[in-house]
Image 1 (tube, rainbow over the protein chains, first blue to last red):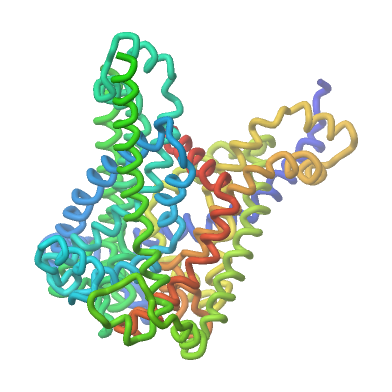
Image 2 (image 1 turned 180 degrees about the horizontal axis):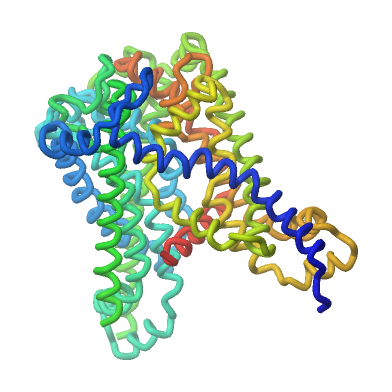
Amino acid sequence: MPKKSFLKELSEQKYAYLFIAPAAILFLVFVLVPVIASLFFSFTEYNVLSAPKWIGLGNYKNLIFHDPRFWKAVRNTIFYVVGVVPPGIILSLLLAVAINQQIKFKNFFKTMFFIPTITSVVAISVIWKWLFAGEKYGLINHYLIKLGMQPVDWLMNPNWTLPAIMIMSIWAGLGYNIILFLAGLKTIPLTFYEAADIDGASPWKKFWHITLPLLRPTMVYAIIILTIASFQVFEQVYIMTAGSEGGIGGVLDSGLTIVAYLYDMGFQKFMMGYASAVAYLLFAAIFVITLINMKVVKSKVEY
Amino acid sequence: MEKSIKRQTRIRNLTIYAFLGLGSLVMAIPYLWMIVTSFKPIAEIQTYPPSFFIHHPTNLAYQDLFRLIPMARYLLNSFFVASFVTLANILFCSLAGYAFAKQRFFGRDKIFLLLLGSMMIPWQVNLIPGFIIVKKFGWLNSFYALIIPNMAMAFGIFLCRQFISTIPNDLIDAAKIDGCNEFGIYKTVIFPLIKPALATLAIFTFLAQWNSFVWPLVVIHTSSMRTAPLALSVLNSQFGEKFGIAMAGATVATLPVLIIFLIFQKYFVEGIALNSLKGRQF
């Protein structure tokens, strides 16, 4: 290949820069600058109207030492993550394994479970708010009564607000994870199962000793993604707990999560600096949890 | 022996069908309930016991939906924003993807790494400064705020780069010998070859934009600029107890994406698989 002249190379580079220019400019203005600006704001007091005032670690100190509402949001969020991730993963794994068997209507089942993934969370929340309606008119309470149980005042009872949102979120998240698991199941060579069949292994043994270990990479990915998404839960909370008075978090902040708190502080109370500090604490928490998740996994993969 | 195995398989299959059938029912009931409620007269919504049977079906809730609030306008807003953002992403992401995959320029790998890294940053971190920037530009309550910041998503650039990397360099060299400049190569070689990836990108972007809620919530405060999810949220707080209208709104906001999904299902599922491959590289 003949050596390119310097001029030709420059003109080719010109095209490359031209090609990435729109994406690069957007990235700079709406991603890179905001990430740095957010960090800066988190050290200031800022209400948008007047210039940000530098207060050092003030926001962080306040959040960590003097803000019970923030800690309530943290506790709620952790409760939410713990209540959504394990059941969500286990249920979608079981469903994926079931769909992966030699059965009819595979596509129908896949589609049924996947539909909530493409429905807006707002629409889903509006529907479930009606399903969770407190009195006997609510469909879920109607079925509870039929099963001989007590009806629950789901979204008005502080003990049940978050569990109600969690039930909905598990339901809505199944399809995405089923698709992930089905993709993972496809990568397991059939010969493994055939060998196990020759040895006379039971379906349960095959699941435990072949499917589960070989599905680990997919499982890890699904757990990390679901954990991150659950830490960031917001839209469900916003729709299902925002009363007509415009507040957020529900009765006694029983449904207040970290991002809901961030939104409340930033966009309803206009404490942008404070809200930025919340955002960075959340960022840090997610980062650390993802690292731990990956570490745990790595150590187990390399046994 | 043979027979008992056959019976075992039959029992097993029955269990599987029962499990999946029950699951599908649980998935379907909320949607059925949404549609049924939206066609019920108010009196029937409030009767006990709740029933899936409608005695006197009516489209009153839909009439109210389009009369009491400009729902048609909101749906149009959503459609316009989602379509525009999708087209922009197809163009900008494929251009950038081509540059990152096949062209050499100063800082290429570092910039790409930065782009990849940015995908790990939670959106909440960008929300407040993003709002302030849009406000400084004077874009609040406008299509600019809804469209421009979303015109080139990092995921799309990544997807295009992955796809374009698999195109043999010989094809590009051949086009060069034919006298194509870089833009010509993009138009005649790259773009036609990555159409499947772009289809995936298009479906993903359109659905994400159609369902997008937090960003519109933050940058749109005037009634006429609302998108469908924002309208739903307002319906939810204003007509909180009138579940008929709320369900009609949810139906109208869900139906378009449901149809798109059922048509293009294949691309969507492929997109998630690609997504998970991306994730594994971290």
